[in-house]
Length: 385
Image 1 (spheres, helix red, strand yellow):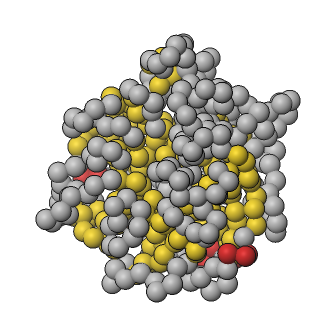
Image 2 (cartoon, one colour; image 1 turned 90 degrees about the vertical axis):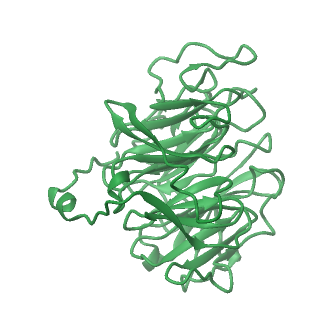
């Protein structure tokens, strides 16, 4: 089970803070459709940036320069059809600096989602032939692939899968436990090869259920995260035609959680084609929803973010997230299980003389700094103005 972390008082007392308003600076530029960035444990001055077409680059954060050759190049295997397929997520093993192992989530040219383990010898390049396929399953449509992959605080590997695409989950994948579609998976990859199913996964003993499933009832989880201090789980789940949502699960809970799709869009019955209904028994309600539209508090495709643990006092303890199509950046505090003290940071978080266009992802450094990944090419770091 996920451990419950206690925040040391000494940590809170000594954590460096700044007291100005948040702003942004350019960390790196020149990427083609970047969708993810991150860094392995133990490093501070390098950032790995992923391009949707199938390459990963290493950026020197001191200079803003990227590696001359890609860290990974699997373009020949990656589908480039539409806007939602491609190389979508990466997770470094907790001991990456020693083992060189990491995991990627992508859709291949046969429209299958593939989870592959790679191993790098020098931490700067990867032989694509070193990849070991762990999971491979067909996507029925070319959208709603999810793509998030991350190690949880319990050392297990978590994988976020969309419902398979089309609209309104026509085959009802999200509520069916015999498919990986519309699910959060949890697997143990600590062995030398392959993976095992953790024995405490909720459906291990349930007939006709995939034992890898940890939670279900999601539509298209686009960027999830674990709070680096508490281990709490956050998820941005992209809506259908009316509502976007942010979901939360306290550390130590979440096994078997049902997030309600396709019966529920946001906090209401799905309002299209008669597929909506009452919330399933025990289903998890979102902690924040917003309507579709172009207003300051509206959007069309949520991009999940992080509970901010960096040095900027104005953001500390706030969940920072955004919308991809209506590129606004917001935050709130969680109070008794609901969003409170909502704030719009869009105006402050714009580069000098420019504008952030499409927020495809956020990234977190090992000291809690947040980066904003703009699908049009740049990567920005949130700083004090």
